[in-house]
Length: 106
Image (cartoon, rainbow, N blue to C red; front, top):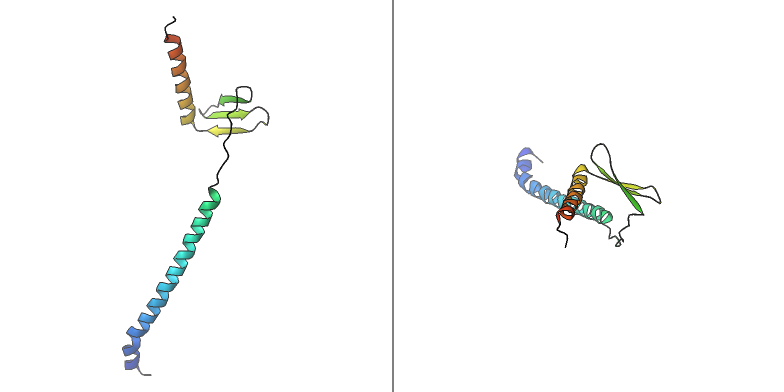
C-alpha cells in the first residue's frame, strides 16, 4: 500500500471508525443513565405514615445556634432542624399566644 492509496481510503476508514465511536458513546451513555436511575431508585423509598407523638413522648429544645431539637424521651434519639425551622415554630407559637391573649372573653 502506498501513500496515495492510504490518503484515498482515509475518508472511508474515518467513517467506519466514526460509526464505531458513536456506537460506543451510545452504549456508555445508556449504561450511565441506567446507573443513575438505579441509584436514584435506591434512595427513594416509600415510608409508612407515622402517628404524631404527644407531649409526654417528646421534648423540644433550642440550642445556642437557634437550631431546634426534637428529642424522643423513651430512646433519647433526636432530630436536629435548622435555625429557620426553629424560628418558624417560634413565630407560629408566639402568634398563637398573642392571638389567645387578645381574644375577647364572652
